[in-house]
Length: 413
Image (cartoon, rainbow, N blue to C red):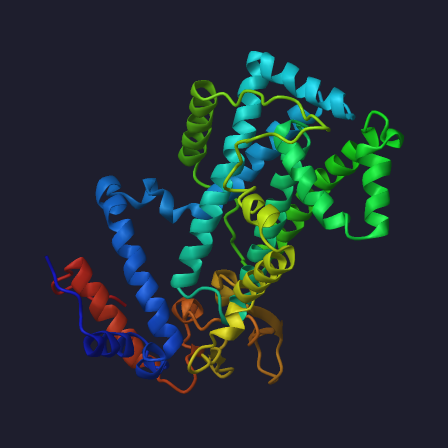
């Protein structure tokens, strides 16, 4: 078993690979030390999974983002099926869900919808946590981080409205949380009487229509956030490998068959339920919200969301990474760097120096993360990390590759 390298050995190794970065300053910054601490803990927790699976292709921790998207697709498809049988009205809605639960296919699809929703939260949280401790949220990657946080908030709201649509005892608790918010204003009191509790509410179809419009509208907003989330990726993977989609569907089907959801008693407007099960992934806030000071709850919630959203700016890098530079004298406009850049940071533009090639590479400093992929793509050594000469970098890379492949006398040209 090999021992972990010391801090000095790590800095020396990284400096040899990429001397354009001041690794000593970067690794000793407070934010980097904090991320290293979280990374060490996380990797130790992941070690049993890596040992048990022993193949990155079948390790779900390496596919958390794409598995989350696939689960959202499952939620969408099962949700479309459930909506086809959903009428609007307090009693009508509950009876419709009861009929769906009484049907074998409907029961399976409803359970898949619920379990996929919970699984999506788990994988999304894992994806966000791994993105955080791997330091992939700062600099030009801020857009993906902010939209990811926004998407999490929207999905949470979708889950809450979904539980409201059943109109059972759990919806009564949600009603109480709504009453506690709206009851403090005259307009809110009027809304409660006219659309939920009073005779003017009638069958309740208007309120249930509002809830399902919110449920579907927020779902559409999730798609927009997802597009923004991947907007700056040139070759973004939307879905996981086929075997992971098959495994996900199988697990959801098995869970739905073995653990059906069942039905809670219908909502009784004149009586609060003594107790009702809550989904810890979506309704975790209810006990604290209903029993504690609401102003304190909302302040704490908004503070946490704002803090997480602002992490790319709260934890800046000790030294900003400079974007890759283009040497026009060597650039022949081959477009290889543009095609290989993962972050859409390179565009081919008309030549500005009057040379014979029609195009030249242009680096967008707002999108470049200084990953160096383009340097390896360029056959003419026209790209570099600032003023760092390329020959030592290529020599180090070839030597490491040769040692790894045990080339023993073979030369890489």
